[in-house]
Amino acid sequence: MGLDRGEKIFNMFNMLFMIVFISVIVFPLINIIALSFNNGYDAMKGGIYLMPREFTLVNYETILKDTTIYRAFGVTVAKTVIGVIGHLAITGAAAYALSKSYLLGRKIFIRMGIITMFFYGGMIPSFLVVKSLGLANSFWVYIIPVLFSFYDMIILMNFFRNLPESIEESAKIDGASVFQIFFKIIVPLSFPVLATIALFHGVYQWNDFFVAKLYVTDKTLYPIQYYLYQMLTSAGAASSAKAGVYISTAFTTQSLQQATMIITTLPIMLVYPFLQKYFISGMLVGGVKE
Image 1 (cartoon, one colour):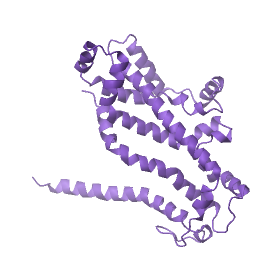
Image 2 (image 1 turned 45 degrees about the vertical axis):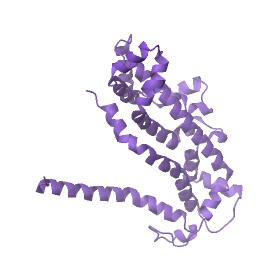
Image 3 (image 1 turned 180 degrees about the vertical axis):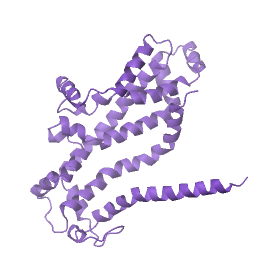
Image 4 (image 1 turned 135 degrees about the vertical axis):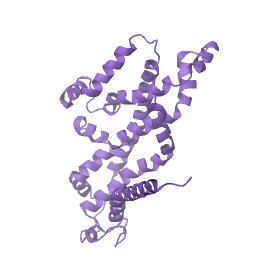
């Protein structure tokens, strides 16, 4: 059955809206890519939109010759991988436990978690807690404070509650322990929703720079996003100039910033397509409760 006039107009409006919406997002990215591959002083003249006018790799060569970016990249990869694994383990285990109606004190724990969603202690109490725990200026300040998220736990808990009880009962009859049931049965069945949560937390860990700004003064612990933040505030550009790794008139502070933005954004953009296919299904199965 064909679409009526109203549906055709609605679909056309949706297409036009999406074209405009995607253009607003994609055009600045393409513009930054073009500027990052262009001679910095030539770019200052303006008029570069989608393609570089004076192509050069000197911006990327300058950035990649600075050893600071490799160390920052390593810190970011480590905190993203360890953070995602830890977050899934802690949040997933809590969600599995709270998905059981016979858990003692389950309603109290859930109500306590809901309260934290509406009332947040604020930056100063959080800062004092992190300092008192000795996490400041430590790699673990990126990991431990965000091991658990009540919002992610609700998504996982709703998914676990919809799994058939008969699967676990069969495993118990065969002598499986709670941990064996969770890791060998529940986790493999929950891959779409776990991949969705991993994507959420992985993007957070990769993009976060505020934790480093608040709690970290040791430069060897700076993540790559904080490195980018420093460049955007000109501090990073100054350090690059002091390093003297490459002396050229082909780049400017702005061209180095644009090249750094591409370098820091590219890895997470490459990972996203592999998890996208699980994203929608993971959100639906975790968010809908029958």
